[in-house]
Amino acid sequence: MKFKKYLVVLPGIVLAFVLYTLSEGFNNILGIELLGYQKSPISTAMISILFGMFFGSVFQIRDIFLRGLDFTRKYILKLGIICLGIQLKPFEFLEFGKIAIPLIIICIISVLIVIKLLIKKLKIPTRMAYLISIGSTVCGTTAIMATAPIIGAKKNEMSYAIANITLFGILSMLIYPYFANFYFESEPMLIGLFLGTSIHETSQVAAAGLIYDQQFNSPETLNIATVTKLIRNTFLIIMIPLFAFLYNRGRSVDKKFSLINIFPYFVLGFVAMIILRNTGDQIFSNKNEWLIAVESIKLSSKVFLTMAMAAIGLSTNLKEIINMGFKPFIVGFIGMATVGVVCIGTIELYLKYFN
Image (tube, rainbow, N blue to C red; front, side, top):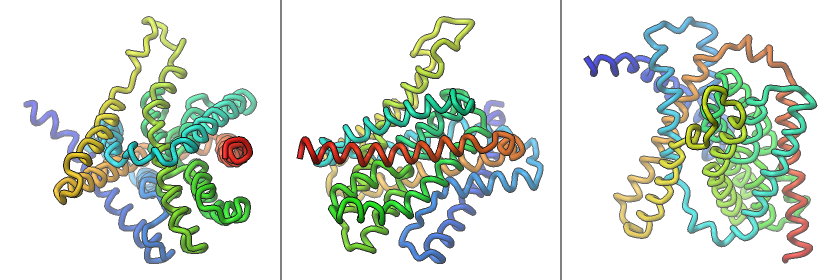
């Protein structure tokens, strides 16, 4: 009987996986075959949620899939975030950490202040603003997916926030490499710090670094941008519990509020993966089996997260998204601009007083 109980989620999980496969194939055709990149700069997760929204709107999702899609949104999503920790190697960050960490902290605080003011001014939903702010400051889509269940965000709010972050992330990915080369006068370290701090998605940062490398022959910039972005991603460990606390504080009516009650315990799994990666690198530094295991977990993370996005897309009501209006996009644009301006200002202060 228990086995049958778990079998009911299987159709929805399979449907999400099929949509992931379609999204991955379409992304490779679009980014590699048509645009000519070695690796597509477009987020597969974004394509997956768009496909999901399209198919969910055109076809009525049968009841047999609903429980599995709900399971994918809630649990496979968290499993994907846990597996994401395997790609982070904090011991490699020491070289740039002295500059990158203060830079990232200042950008995060600045965006949170600006968006807090915009919530009151534009009267947009608080949950939406939280999702856009964490997506703008930490790691784009992944941060939004990790934060949404903690603050009780609706599927439509999550979809809107991801579309918002992806749009402005792609714009900055295409514009910032050329702007940074002009403004920072071809200085690889400063350009890498700027790209790694100001662009939302890890894939977009890598693409921007690659664009810069191909245009201006600077592989060093690509490496610095990527490492800076990975440092930024580690702030997910701090920001998710912080957002959980800030959002839920004062909202509990029936029971006394406690951080323990709303703490996202899957973050501990994320931290455990980081520790596992660094411990494994020390013990099995040059063993192929360990490298294969790491790559397998990285791939699993991508698959799980993209499946979750497909499930969210299939469950999203497009009419409700349209009814949300354009104001959240204003917040997304201002968030992107704030990160860029604050990043430049902080780098200038570093050059003037600490270099």
